[in-house]
Structures are given as structure tokens and as C-alpha cells.
Image 1: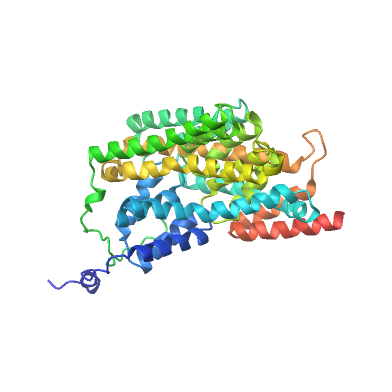
Image 2: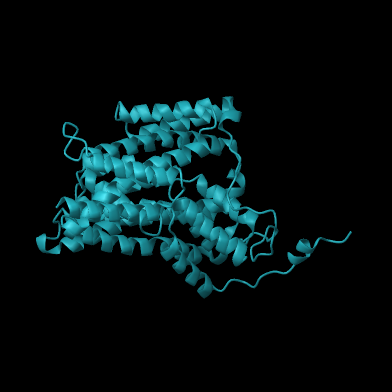
Length: 452
């Protein structure tokens, strides 16, 4: 029987990927990875699967499914995984770090401008327009996740219960995640049809093309599971974490700002199921209400900056660290910028270290976890709870934006109108986040100039 033309085409393998070429791509990706995880994954799929043919469709989705099971930013973890698969640990480190570092540098610059000049009319006007847009963006995120997740009454009940637990009882976010996971474990056992998910990713194609790492390419030696390698990775990761946190304790004490930031963001990194929007309420509870590192309006401004920079949205934590460090003169009043930069770096390190450990330790086990309901059912329940959590976050932001002087003061109808307009173009016209923020920022600048 003669083979179809496309089957013959798959016999021609692409050349091995030079390290320098891969490095250049990961660096480029770090500067163009706008659009949240969906956009970032779409860029990697277009470049690595369709155009460069570095990895096949099936292998790409296999890696993505594993990353979706993990806490943390799935797009950054996917980049780390693919870099590791192609060029061992060094490749994974390069891909994962370059995905984050451009965003970190940009956010430090923008954070310093905001904290130093945020009360100037120009900057204040821009953020007056941006903050209502953030309300609409968060609400749109809840709808986007909910439309993919809440497929039956069980999941709707979990989402509503999570919202009520936060809104009415101010329940801790980790408790909500734990409860949802336990419900998912039970549901996967007793009602598996309610908690099963079919992997469906946009941009897939039935046409299989030749790739350096193709469907039938043998697993390279460094990617094969070894218990000894697993123990080495875990020991190395825990040692890095322990040495870093121990150094902070020795230098600043357990109650020192940087130590507390390192400890808190370690916990936050382990709870980021469902994306950055899911963990933001937990970050808010700690950073604003418990520790007082920044204010509610500053948190909203940080989310706006995170939405307009490349890289994972969870990088908003670098803004939290920067503002908290700037406002705590731990190096003296003349070194506020140094304190802010140090805190941003510490927060970023402790937020992303677990992601690298998860990939280097767990990637060789993906065959045993992919499609296993014991793993996917708790994730489905957690994602349902995340919808309720994000709705609560949108209401919290709305309260601060629409009643800037407090709940007993008059409502800011201009802010309400801006948020409604932003929601309209997001939901109805499917306009991207960046144009919405830019338009609202311009509107805020015009409104502020007229009202002066």
C-alpha cells in the first residue's frame, strides 16, 4: 500500500536544535509573551510545533497536560519543560529564566516610576482610567475560566460555595483549595463522569509534521525516570530553598521583611492552581490585610502593570515585593530603591523556585500522570472553586474603585462607566486586554485633565 504524501514527509527529520538558536528563541519569547497563559502557549505552539518543527503536536500537548496539573504558571513551566527536554537541565533553566527575567526587569522599572511619581497628575490620571479596566478584566477572567470549567451542577455548587466562603466568611484561600481538592478526590471516585475532562486545546491540527522531537522519537536518556535522579533533584531544590531562607533569617531575623516575604511566597507558589487570578486573593489577604506591605489601590495598580508587561501574570508579586521593600526602610531612607529591588528579587526567587523543581523532578513521570482521573479530578474541582474566588476578587476590586473614599462615600459613576465600557468590549467584541487598558488609560488621562 502506498503511503500518503504527508506520511512520507514525516520521514524527513529536522536538524538537531543548536543551543544558541534555542537560547535566542527563549530570549525573544520573554519579551513577546503577552496575552496571559493562553496567548503565551499559543505563541509557543505556533513557533515550536508549526513553524520550527522542534517538537510534534502530540508531544507538545503531552507536556502541556502535565503542566496544567501543577500549581504555578503553566506557560512558564511549559517553556521550562520543553527547554529541558531539548537541552537537559541547562536548557530548562535557560527557557524558564528567560521567560521571567524580561518581565521582572520591566516591572521593577515601572514599579519605581509608579511609587515615585504615582501622585503626579499624569500618572494619577492614567491609573484612574486603568483601575476600572482591571475590574472588567478580572470579571472577564472569571467568565472565561467558568465557561471552560463549570459543565455540570456539581462544579457550579463548588464555585458558588467558594465565593460564599470568601465573601461571607473571609475563609483562608488555602482552606478553600484543600476543601475543593478533597471534594474532587471523592467525586473522582464516586461520580467520575462529573469530574472528568477531555483535553481540548486550541490550535491543534490533524496534520502531523516531522519534528526534531517527533511522536515516535525515543525518550532521551536524561528524560527517563530514575529514582536516584528524582531524589537528587528534590534534594537540590530543597537545599536551594533552605539555604536562601536560612540566609534571610540570619541576616534579618525570622520576623524581618525579606524573610517573611520569602516564607509567604513559598506558600503562595504551592497554591497557584488555576492561574494567577486564583492566587491573587490569597496574596491580597496577606500582603494588604495581614502584613500591610501595600494598600488595596496599590494592589490594583500592580495588577494593571502585570497585565501590560510580557511574562506570566503572577509576576505581579514582584510589584508587591518592590512596593513593600520601598516602604520599609530596611537599608535606610537613602536606599529605598535598593530595598525595593531586593524585595522584588527575593519574591520572584521564592515564587518560581517550586516551578523548576516540579518540572525537573516530575517531568519523567508524565506518562503515569497523564489522563489519570486520580490526578485530574481534584484539579477540576479546584478550578471550579477558582471561578468563585475570582468573582469575589472582582467584587473586591470594584469596591475600591467605585467607592474610593470608602463604602459610606458617594459612588464614582465615571469609574463605573469606564468599567462597563471595558467589560462591553471584552465580552461583546473580544478585544484584547492590552488595547482595553491603553484606551482606559487614555480616557482616565483626559478625564483627569478636564476635572482639574
